Length: 64
Image 1 (tube, rainbow, N blue to C red):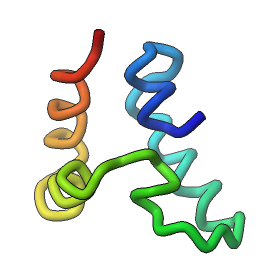
Image 2 (cartoon, rainbow, N blue to C red; image 1 turned 60 degrees about the vertical axis):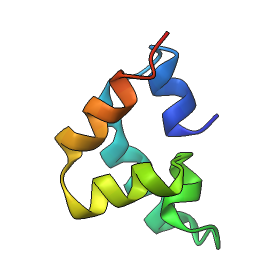
Image 3 (spheres, one colour; image 1 turned 45 degrees about the horizontal axis):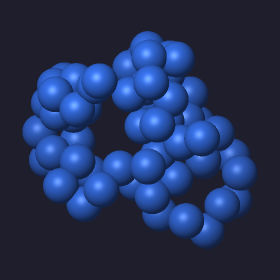
């Protein structure tokens, strides 16, 4: 499961995004980071252009 799937399911806290980024950096996975995390283009843009907090708010709005 991706970071986004696990976060939206309530399995992990948002701070785990850092662990996923570290995993991706060490993995050699050819997938772009946003795809590895499960983020769509808008979510990735908000994360890069704004902040972690802006992405968290965006994802929190999607929680069930």
